[in-house]
Length: 165
Length: 427
Ligand SMILES: [Zn+2]
Image (cartoon, rainbow over all chains, first blue to last red; front, side, top):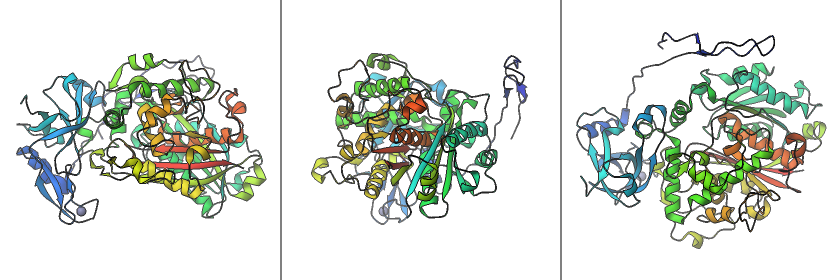
């Protein structure tokens, strides 16, 4: 943990007007930390994104197909194998975010979509780009786009409408 | 299992910030308020406690429940922390129930708190979103309101639910809270004002979404002997249930509805369930709680519900999970006025007003949502409602239902990942 120069600095002048004990003392206390995060058994998915491939998981037991990968099947417990998702999908549902968590505020407004694929049992969460906000609707055909400069995050892939890209 | 009773409850006022009190002092205030109502309960009759808070990030203090426990003077009695996202309070309540039902304890204190004011609202949203998959969900948008917006867009697509119906939930809950001095954000709103407030994530506006809060709540649970000894009107906890679903919304199946006794398979012939429009864990929780309490038709056999309305949309979705109406009818359920309070003027045409009140207290939308306290707050309001002591505790009889016999409380985490339902009955 790294402490910044602001640590321990009162953010408000303490007022002595609320009786003998006064108002509470409030200080600014910064902290940040770097993690060594392993994608572990999901690593091939993120490597795949960096190579322009979107991989799902196929159950070796019941054949259930997951759009968002997992190494073992939720239905039957058998291991899964990596299998490319279909080249196109559709908007299953969406929203335009005008606010977000602090680190995403600068990107607003942005479009979140859950993507559905034919013959795949589950969905995939992603961003939708390259479309006017008012033209997005459930069922819109979309396809994945991949970053040329991968950061090895799930945001290395996003979706765009088929007819525009 | 032994019968379990709630014998008292206490709440602090929920507020945007309580900088003059840390979590220990807030819990102490709620605890002392609860003790005041049971003066014959001595400390040696209390066997232990369960602490409830959601986020170590908000508190910036690991094992904070230990500090609440020692502040209450309960050491060296048994203690533990329960954590389950937004359902933390509901899980804590059920954990105390388990301690009594099993015979391990005769009296157990469930206490919960959250101090969300330590960071700005958008950093707070980020902390909450860390309770979504941090590999696959958080980096894409990291925003629970976005997740709920996607769910309700699908609900609207499947069932024709409207934004005006959602806004009616906001009007109802904010207005109920005008009569609840513990509430953080009570006000009179119109459907138009809800729709014209700033858009957060389409179609959810600021007035469709609960706020962050500081606050604490305490419930005291006991066996029959202690309940009879110290409490005039204990409330019997006759059913508990809980359920779960996959952390990632994207992983939810599209299968069949687990039916309640008053439903038939033909009701849902074409529905793919739960998808992202419904909460399978909520249905499971309700089904288990109803089975334990012997409830076959919740709308006929319950008097009221306090449910987890973090969003107006999730209140509508939850009507359906609890079986108050069929899946798909949640929008019309509010539009007809069924879940509004009787005897209060909302400025809306409500043909069936007050038939089955939901969130008489004002719910999370108006009371606030200090996560670890929320599920316990609902228990306290339901307890006062069933005791008939709303006027004594809220300084107004407006929210006291006439002759309530049985109430339901519902606590909900994540995008429906943990959900609890508990049934409380007048004795
Ligand atoms: Zn399988």
